[in-house]
Length: 216
Image 1 (tube, rainbow, N blue to C red):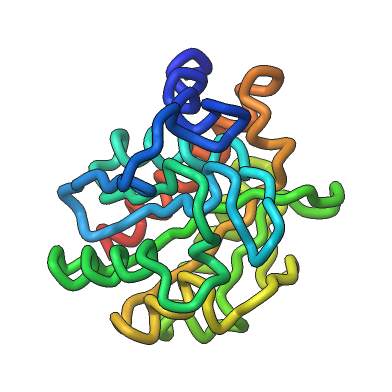
Image 2 (tube, rainbow, N blue to C red; image 1 turned 90 degrees about the horizontal axis):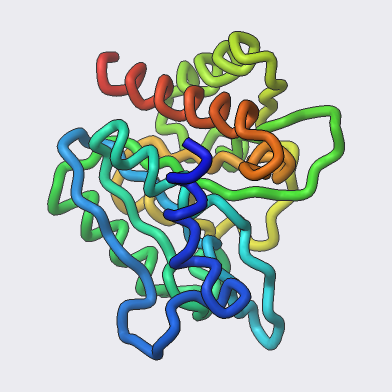
């Protein structure tokens, strides 16, 4: 897995995580799937938030690409540095997700992020205090159980966010009426080069929540 993930990450890592080597209109990329689940990595490269450059959340893009392939899920990920789709109003990345959901009858969105966390938890499930779950609280309970299975502590709504109203999960759940969750992963778990086992555990958890949803 390690070499495959490092290979998938190269597109994002170009130019110190500003993305592709040439200017292009393709700020993000979409991968088609065969099951009604979509994975998102809006911070796979550096983002612009107002006048500031925010660092990429490394390996979230390659994680999405890998799991999209292993599960036949749809995927979307930022490929070139632009404004932050999880912060700005009326962002074309969010509009693309809405269009994909509606055109392909997608039923579940998983938006992947990473963060520097303390060691008291490993993954935070952001649901805007349950508002984006669309009454699918079982998804949170299943994820917590999967964390116990793989010896990772999974919590809910711990990591603070800057603009809940414009978050992808909030906008898509309201417009499309589907459950949407944001998984914020402790970045130490995504250090593929030094800890492939933890990365594999994260992959297993996401693959298994997709399987659970698809067979529910």
